[in-house]
Length: 227
Image (cartoon, rainbow, N blue to C red; front, top):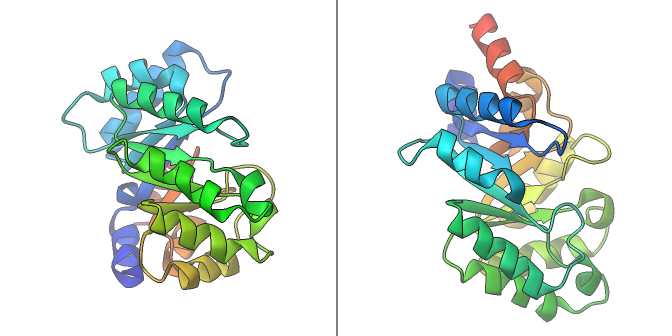
């Protein structure tokens, strides 16, 4: 799968990009421009917050190849499960096609893996694909990584996201490590510090399925200039 994704990235990186629109300070005009450009660029996805969903759905339309993705409980995940479910239901009602969920790290670190997994399962049961966000600062160099990944997949998650855009950029070794844990059981989305085409290509080669970035247009432009 990694070789195929790398070939796709080399041919057209847009198929692997999830354009992030999470800046709380952008105005409506900027949001519309980003949505329209993402659609024209044929990005794999546009990931945004609950407040921007109605405009994003309207601009992308219903026949667009760019999937509308919403973050849930972003960025910390420390809200009740019932609130996360309400956020997810709201997102689905507003036309979202995938969810990027921040799980309950607190329960995981207490050893309550069943509680951690049950929350993911409840949201996965709402009927659209769920990607679980792994906070590299909290989990990656600890015994919890395997627990988090395996519990997420068993609970119904269709993907794992490494990184959340905060802290240091994701490294190639981290992607390779996560790829070893997932064992091709789900997709891998990488987020954090990805600003160039070469960097994006490298992380795909390391095992990433999708690239989450707010620099999607710059990366695509750079690829076209190099081709």
